Length: 110
Image (cartoon, rainbow, N blue to C red; front, top):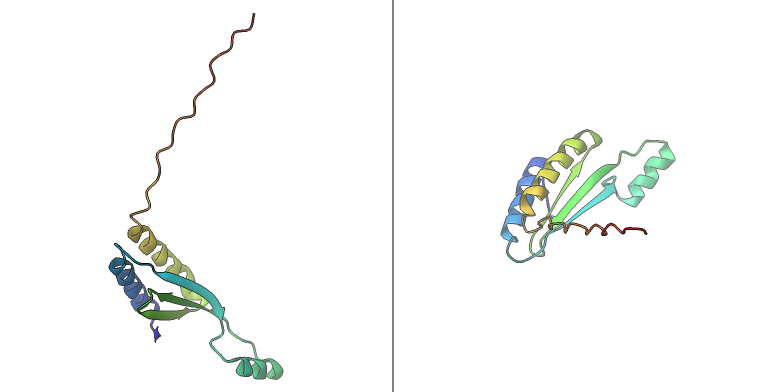
């Protein structure tokens, strides 16, 4: 797995979507992580140190795996860019045309 900075990660993710546009899938996972082993986290807890959690983002298309980690400050900007990429690459999902509901015929009362 290749660990990238957020901007190169988004570029690679975009190219993954592009290469799998006709056939294939891309899986993206978001996970809360401290990027430390369980032993290290337990040592930090016993010492009374605070553990900084980050957002670990992984993506794969079955052939290639990429990952990045985000701090709280970077998350909102990353999410906005990620949303833009998703909207641009999901062209096959089209809105269905809504059928107009038939209005019931006015019933005349005698």
